[in-house]
Image 1 (tube, rainbow, N blue to C red):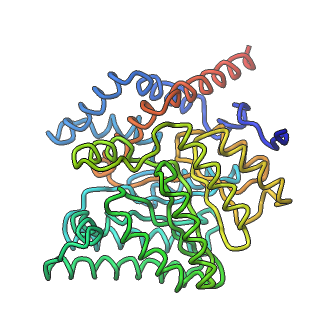
Image 2: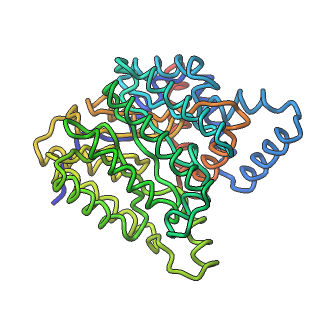
Length: 395
């Protein structure tokens, strides 16, 4: 028999309390577009082409989809969003989402921006975590060669060492500031060297509490086992394991590459298997809460509710600092704000960066909402329910 959950996600008044009527109408417009795959594809293609051709589309993008899913183009521009979230007891994770660095100078610039997010988070309870993507700090080709154990050229060896140095610089500052940093997951064919470096950083910086978190994409068939091995390593080396758990972001890419290169697809065959893997992962983390701290990065209502039930079963307070819930800005507000109101630790990812460099991120959000069964429909239903509730209150 299932325990009665402590929190429900259908209260739209709580979910959208931070949005004005105008902002809610804009959200309705955006998710109406995203809800039609062909319209969404056309809109993102036009936006991409407009920026490439230097047509005056930046203002339109900025006033609609960028404003909905991003904090701003800079950290300073994101402060307003951070302050709004804080009023509703939701923390922010500043996520520098500009993509496309292809040079050592570009990677250094990205590292500098990540360090600025740490500077902003220092002694700032409104920003309880920071995050970075490894592919913003090194060429993918280098990581791929390291994983496949191919011989590196002298330049590649140097590039890989620079990557290690950048990660060390970020983790050292996170440790000095006592601000946890999460290392995002990447494609399966470059993930191993990132994992190895993550655990190296944990052994160094997670001796008193988790500062470095690694990310586990539970749609991978091997990930539950990887999580168990990581826990074993933490026990053997006496450090705290920081776990950020997500379902996964590169499903189509993984399947295409596996087929092209004729190796077994590393991703679970269906959504149910992924959901089972994710929920088993949650249970494993809570069973081992003395050693593991968990960031549950999920837009799935059942998984979030299941985690609250697990916490209750283990007599954990909603505010227990070993468990956090995370969603993306502009998505699943019904989960984030209802959890926060019930006293759970909640953060929103607040992406920022120049509009043209954040476009790949925005396009992924659009395709993600289109491809996840019912995601944009669910968002639309909730937004329209709240608009109707507000209209009813005024009549």
